[in-house]
Structure formats: C-alpha cells, structure tokens
Image 1 (cartoon, rainbow, N blue to C red):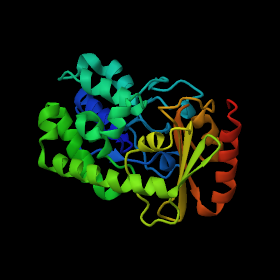
Image 2 (image 1 turned 90 degrees about the horizontal axis):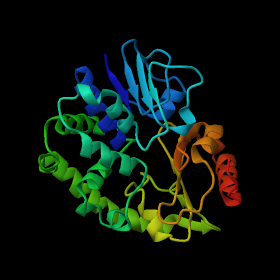
Image 3 (image 1 turned 135 degrees about the horizontal axis):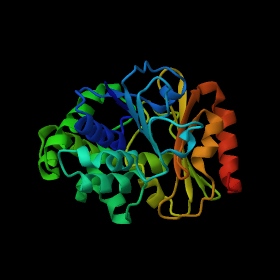
Image 4 (image 1 turned 90 degrees about the vertical axis):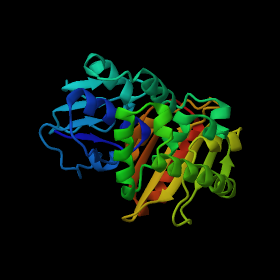
Length: 294
C-alpha cells in the first residue's frame, strides 16, 4: 500500500493523515496531476490516491477538485471542499494518533487562498504560510524534502517543525526567492483589461515564488494567467482568481478541463505540448476577458 499524492502543501498533509490512519510506510509516491490525467503513472492495487485525478486501479481515492468529479461511485470520498486534507481528516479523524485540527485548518485556508494581505506580503511572520511555500511542485530533486516534511508533521509540534535545520534552510530560501520573484513579476506581467498575464517563457529556469504576490502587485486584476515552459518540451499555464479583488466569474477548473488541465473554480493549471501555446493562451485570455461564467 502506498500514498500517491501531489507535491504541494495539501498533498503533504494528506500524506501525513493517510500514513498515520492506515499505518502506511514511507516514502510517498509524488505525482503531477497531468501525469495522472494522461495515465503516465503506474498505480497499483492497494494504492491510496489523494488530491489527484482518479485512477481506476487504486483502492481508495480522496479529492476535492471541481474538474475531477467522478461519474460513478468510487471507494473513498470526493467532495468540493477547501482542501483534500480536510476530507481525509473528516474520514479518518477517529483513527488518528495525534490532533491535527490546527494543521488541517491552516491547510484549508492555504489551499483555498483564504489569506490576509499581511500573510501575502509577509509570509515569514506566519509559520504555516511560510512552510507551505517551501514545497515546490515541479522539481523531483526535492522529493527527499517532501518526505522529510511528512515525517516531521507526523511526529512534531509546529514549533519544532519550524526549528528543524532543513526546514529553516528552505524557509530562508523562500524569503530570498520571493524578493527575486517580485522583481520578475513586475518585469514580466502585463495587464489586459482585468486579466494580468505573467509570461515567463523566455526565462530559464522560470522563476517561482509566492503565488499570491501578483494580486497585491496588480490590484486592478481579478485573475492572473501565468505561462511557463516546462521540461520535456511542455508548456504550463496556471490561472488563479485574485484573492484581493474578487471579480472573476469564470470557473477556472471547468475552463481548463478543455485545455488538458483542470482544478478548482478559483484556480487551476494545464500542461500541454509547447506548439499549442499560442492557441491555448489566446483562447484562455479571451474567455477570462469576457468574464462569463463557464
């Protein structure tokens, strides 16, 4: 039996809860949503999938993404909710050895982007927010850290987690990276009506950082589109409603399901061959400009 999830904060907390409740041994099988969508993942009988699209070979599945709604009954739980971790916690609460209430509450807030302006601008003052930013979702070389974090959150208080030398190093990196990332956002983001478009295609590697920062830098935008070129000749587009100027009516997950992706009503992503970029990007921006619910 393995935990199969994605490398983001919600996925890490899902792994913490599932490994505790079901006594599953590490390591976690870390998977990108697009790889699961395109059946590039070897899922085995007994696997427990969380925070990812469904795979018929798994034994249990937990998810909350609008675009992943199952068409038939499945073993596990699907529910539209702030986080997948919250669903897992509700399902297994009585079997858990520790009290994860605060961890799950903060995961709900972070995954649903229910943050204050001060948390966005000064994540270093908010341990859960800062810790969530140490988890990148695109670099497999970081797997050792994701697994280390799962182990820490299963056995230590938040104070002791933040005092771990590796966590401290990652947090320092985040603070330094966010300074560089702000500069990159200012230099590579344009505003088209109420849509901010961040184009990192010419930057190698593409900068990464505080995903909420763009909303404070461009307060007139109601939605952001970020385009980068990934490895393996793929492109990635991420779309998110502003959490400071809530005027976007487009269901992002539903929209992106037509572009080889998916997600939530307020945020989502898609990955596809680079030669499709001009067509996909233009169509996505056009839909967002019209701002008609889809």
